[in-house]
Length: 161
Image 1 (cartoon, rainbow, N blue to C red):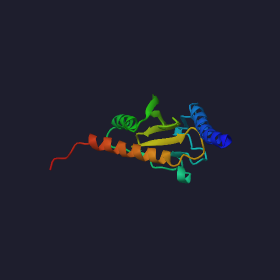
Image 2: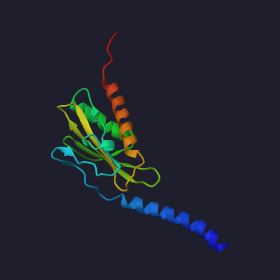
Image 3: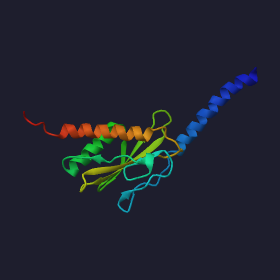
Image 4: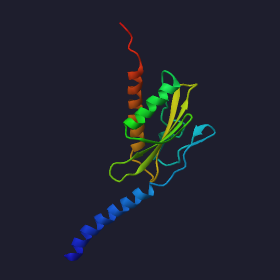
């Protein structure tokens, strides 16, 4: 009886400990940035999406913007913060933001590169650890796209009837 009871306690404790360890491991740095003027390609794992990647399920559409590139960049920063991201680094035409999961605080990285000539913002979202992300990065980019479009719609003047 004691052995069964201790197993009921030990197994959940080991699961929680393993999740905590993974969470700690996700705090490390990942290769980020650009190469040849583009965001880095996604690794061949289903936990990354990018508008500059042509590999099947990793491919997403960039954000199209209206107005000036500077105004679009400000809308993007508001959208990132609006869906819970923290901007870690910003330089001329590039943003790196992080998002943390609620329970175990896993970190996902999201990067952006503006292309003013084509009036789009390229984006890449990737989990720091693990193989699968259970669709988290697709859902996050969809939420960001929706928030960005809402910000953009607010910025447009309403035409008089």
